[in-house]
Image (tube, rainbow, N blue to C red; front, side, top):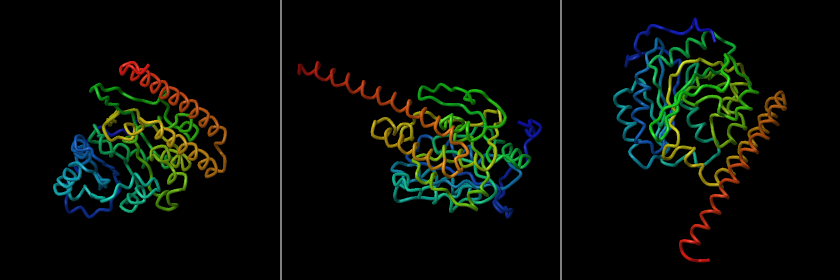
Length: 312
């Protein structure tokens, strides 16, 4: 990474309600039943300090708690930044790409940043630093940074790629299996999606981060900034990882990822075929291990029930 682009002084604050400049960055934030966390997330979005105009499209996916109420509060206080979208029906459950298409319709500018409703940013210059980097490196289609993982216990762990390097490729993403970067660290060029539309391999997948990385890797380099600028919450109620506790969900996800790999292979003209094969083998081993653990837990649970109720 070219560290000469790292900003050390703050640019003018982006606090003008009459700002007529074109939007340069759209922050995309999806929220669902995250009333405990959404305020911290939104606060980290509206306190970004930039010398360009940005907006945050905050999408409430038909929450049944007070998440939408908190979003409305911030929408009223920061109408120049927060652009809220409220659903009556949960789009994520459709698994047909409608959630991403909904967000695409509200996305504008040169770049897209992501921060889901239970995560938050810790550096008020995060957007500015990533914007400056992308402007100086036109070959880069996505940049990302180090982050902290916040465990349910409250413990924080700094997360970096296993072997940090300045530039990553599609092969790196495939072999990392989506663990290369945190979603809340991603900052990518919007022009490719705006021009070409979202490919089928993205629409058919039940997660959004891995297809995002793979698509970006097909358009340029993925560059790493070695600064901790965000926090990813692990295992929060209602999160994707929390919903993947049952074997049926794990199996559906496994099949979705295999389909993603095959369709990406075709999309890229089989340029990364060897890496795709290796990624599928790695994913299969991981899945079979989880199946074995789940079945073992079920076996011991059954034995415990039999002994406790005397049915032996």
